[in-house]
Structure formats: structure tokens, C-alpha cells
Amino acid sequence: MSAGAFSIDQLMELAGLSVSQAVFKLQPLSKGKRILVACGPGNNGGDGLVAARHLFHYGYQPTVYYPKQSKNDLYQRLTTQLRSLSIPFTTDFATALTQTDHIVDAIFGFSFSGEVREPFPSIISMLRDTKIPVLAVDAPSSWDIESGPPGEGPGKGFMPTALISLTAPKPLVKHFTGRHFLGGRFLSPQMADKYGLDLPNYAGIDQIVEVPVGDGEKEGEKL
Image (cartoon, rainbow, N blue to C red; front, side, top):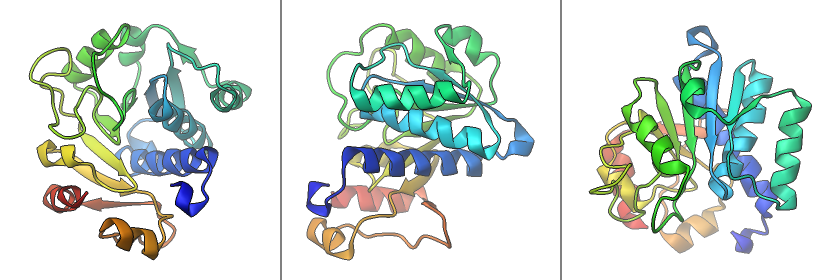
């Protein structure tokens, strides 16, 4: 990403915008405005914070679950922006789950590895078991970037309703069976050629494009 002279702020803003547009496609306002955004402590959580701000401006009613808040200046500014819009933060995920129409899983992204630590094991278990639609950001939380869903632990059996891959699909998409979106309308043709990426055709002003799971699998294998 540094080769394209993008800052982390820019990339997070573009990612969060893509996530918010995927929610708009999956959950039109007429089907329910309440969106629960579950954010982890890293960049994936930052994408969720940005998405929550955009969702508010679209007319949704986001609630943010962000139990491990970063002291980094960027994340502090993102949370300040949400609080200035009176977007609520909750510490009770189980109750919030009963009061929402759609969920954004922005807990762990493609860089996740190792053990899922508290309070996230129970959160991922609830995401797995809920009947409410879940959109995962870049990777379903607890999934391995290469091998996909874990064979044991809280993420075993977790298959979100939809996935938005940011910049390009990751190898784990081979194991995903829900609706699949791509987001990241900023890569140059030169960068795509360098990494062997087959960039999709985005329509109009859309920052996302939906692709069949089979197509995402082929693109993921190129990475």
C-alpha cells in the first residue's frame, strides 16, 4: 500500500466506506435501520468504526461494540467522531444482539493469528449462533487467512451471511459459501499487474461489486 502513497487513514476510510455500501446492499433501510458493529482492537475494528459513521449519515441507527479501545490517535479520533454524532457504544453485546437488524463483524481481519482472547470467544460464538444476518469484514473473525474456518474453538461452524473482501479476496474465500463482495476501488492498474490481481468492473460510483463465490475463489487463489 505504501507504494501507492496511501496513508493508513486513507485506506481505513476507503475500507469503511466499502463496508457501509455492502451493508446498504444487504440491508436496505426499508428492512431495518438498526446495525450492530462489532469492532476489534486493530485495523479491522477501525474499518468498522468508519463504516458506522457512514451508516449514520445514510440514515441507519448504528450501535458500536468496541471493548478493547485503542489509545492510538487515529482510533481515538474515529471514536470521537462517532460520539459527536451521538452514536451509542455498548458493553453488553448479548443484549445489543436482541435489538438489531444486521451485524457487522469487524473484530479480526486477515492479519489474525493465534488464540482468540477474551472477551471475543463468547462474541464470536454468538455471531455463529445468531439468526440475524452478519457481514464479515475481510475475514470472518477467527478464520485463518489460508485454511479458513477453525476446526475447533468458538469460531468452529461460523459462516457469516456475507463477506466483503478488501482490496482483493484472501485465500480463505475458498471456504466461504455466503454472498461475497469486493471493495477497494483505488488500486492502480500497475499495482494490479504487479500482484496478478484481476480487478472487477465497478458500476457507476459504487465502491463495491458483488461476485459469485466461485469467482472470488479463483481470484483468491491468485494471491
